[in-house]
Every structure is written in C-alpha cells, then in structure tokens.
Image 1 (cartoon, rainbow, N blue to C red):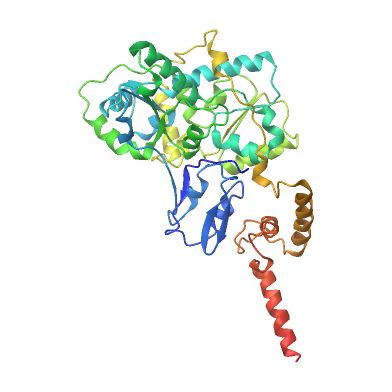
Image 2 (image 1 turned 180 degrees about the vertical axis):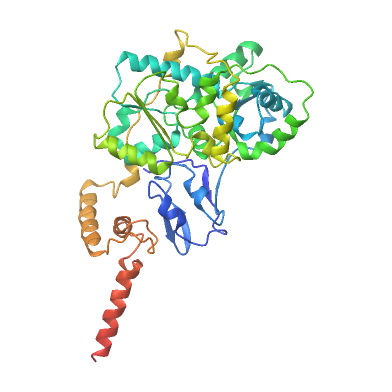
Length: 424
C-alpha cells in the first residue's frame, strides 16, 4: 500500500517548458521530464525548494496559507521565524515587527526564536550527557531530515531527537493561550510565518510527531507587503519581544551552532554542501565533531525561497540586529526537555527507492537495471528526461521509460537501421 504524501512544492504544467534545470538540481532525483513536462516523484520530494529557486519559467511554486485564513479562530497566534527580522532595512527593534503583526490582526505573538533558545539549551544538555550517537546532526531543518531519510538512512540514528523550534513554539504558545483564555485548541489558530516550503510540509506531514501543533504557515513573501505597510504607520510600539541574540541568530547559518557555546561543531548550508558533508559523514571521514548544523538553503533560513530579501543582505541585517539584544531570555525548566523529545523514531523511507513489493521480483528488476545501466553511455546528460543514466535504467525496469529515450541509444539504433537499408 502506497503512503500518502503532502507536498508544498507544486508544478504548474502550463508554465513548464520541459527544460532540465530542475532535473539536474534536485538532490533526491525526484524530477523526471516526460512528454515535454516536468513530473515530481512524490515519494522522493523533500520540498527543499531548489526547483523553485532554479526554474527560469516560474513553473514551480509553494503552497502556503493566506492571511485571511486566520479569521475563523477566536484567538489568532503569529509565530514569526527569526528569518523574518532580516527582511527589513534599518531595523533595530524586533518589537516594530511584532507590533506590526498585531496590527495585521493577530491577538498573540510567540517568537520562534524563544523556542530556539530552549532547543539550544536542550541540545547542550543532551551533548553533555553523552547518550546520543555522535556526531549529532541538528533536526531543525525538515528538508535535511527528509534528505537523510531518503538518501542517507545509516545516519538516521545521528539526528538529534528534538522537535524543531517551530513545533516547540507552537506547543508552548497553545499552552499559554489556553491558560490565559480557557479556550479549547480548536479555537486557537497558530500560524508560522515561514521562509521555506519544507516547513509547510512539516506542518502537514510531520517527521517526528503524529500531529503538528501548528495550524498553518503563511509565507514571508505573502505577508511582507501588508506587514511593511502596518509597520510604517505604527503610532505605538508594544514591548512584545521575549528572545535574545541566541534565538534570533538561528536565522543565519552557523547561528544554531554558535549557541552550543564552545562545543566542537560544524555548520554547512546550501543543499549541495549539505550532501557533501553527509557523504563524508557516512564514509566516516568526519571525526572529533560533537554537533553538525545543516541548512538546505544557502545562508540558512534567511535563504529560503519564500523570503523576499537577498540572503546575504538578510544575514548582515540579522548580525546588526543582534547587537541590540540580550544573550538569551528563555531557559529550560524540568518538564521542558521531555516535552521537546520526538514522539516517532526517524526511519528510512523505503518506498522512495523500492522497485517492487515482491522481494524476488525486486531482485530480478535490480539485475535487469544493472544490465541496462551497463549499456547506457554514462554521461548523465539528462536529455532522456531522467537525471542520470542509472535513474533512466530504474525508470525502464519500472515500465516508465524505454531505452530509446536515451538519445545516444536512439542515434545508434537509427544508424544501425540506416546501415542495414544501405546494404540492401
């Protein structure tokens, strides 16, 4: 029985012209070109947004919630990602952004950077206890977690079993609102202001829990115009900020690692660099490291495809903003750590590369795949509609392609027919 997947990344077939830009950049070989259009293999897509970033025809887009969807709830909670604060020029006070969100119609603001500070402290505690498999890989980026499930299953045991700050923030926000108002969960709408599509997918199809406490996600790019307008016309700025430089620093690559406060760490950003680190880690070439921070987007969360500002400009703004902040305003209590642990174990997504549900048939298909692969040119040119020759061989044994989809094989076949006809 095939698993049902939710994906925030969608394809607009009318805009797709069948170029191979997305095909070559997808980190999990989740894209094929068939009948002149791109097709996304649902079981392999990690919603990293690389196809959105690279598509020159804007044929890929990400689903998210609209600001209007907050209206049915009695209490509307906004959870701004730390990356949001890097989108505005000359910002020296987070309260301006938070008050702007209140002016947009949100009743309560809970910064995700508050939860990031708690996750940082929990991570330091778990590292000191030395109970986890090292090096420990951060679980904050859902695209990286899904990448590990699909391409690097041997590293599943290295992933930090802590909920991401977005989920921790949502649970704490709900507890606070319930305590203040006495309302039930269904009356409370908790909306994450997101820089990336992977977070949207995580809300609807979480890796580490049965059900997310987040109601929905609104893209930074969608809320930015209205929020900027509200910020420009504020008469009073409310003192709403409750996080420090450790939490806000999570917006940039290396921010989470810096919060380890001296532990041996490595930080990498950009999906290609992330894959390189994971390959070296899988080959046991990386040693003497306690913690690895990996961000699928270049620059960290500020580089998400749903952000509006150049990630390097946003990075500089976050760095400048941090000098106005206290170090940290949030600390763990005795119950917090237990509440932050994963509910589900991270396991390999076997369906991603399964050839057949029948083991004997799958072994036969694997043998055929190897034979077909030997007969292909090994150029990985993408002209066949698959990212590599091996991927084409897999598609052939699954019945989704044929050998003559390879233009080099087709050319050889045409030449053979021509030579035969010439000898008649």
